[in-house]
Image (cartoon, rainbow, N blue to C red; front, side, top):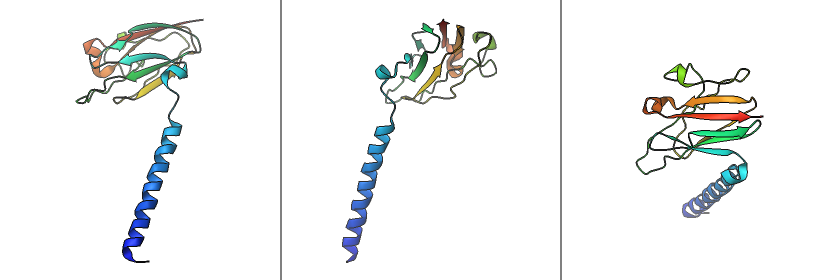
Length: 142
């Protein structure tokens, strides 16, 4: 086998592995938002949660999606109820018995999910844009 044949075989094997890798990654992507059953809250380029207030039942999941996907977008967002992470701790609150949550930074096109197990009012913020008014609420009913 000459050098050219070996190189062609190596390229062919590499291309096959890349293709199979892409198929495996595609197969592990979670179900679409419509199929997941989660309530969707979008985080926008205008530094807003859309919708800003939602009501769900105990056991439901909310998925916050960074919908800031413009070509020039560099906006990362965050979702937190943690007073130690919020710019103003008075902007966040959770019901007694619930634990605070924090998504950390969410890049464009990515998301964060949280299942609510304790009824009550959850007030949350996006710390990088909190001073722009990026605040939201989830009311969880029994």
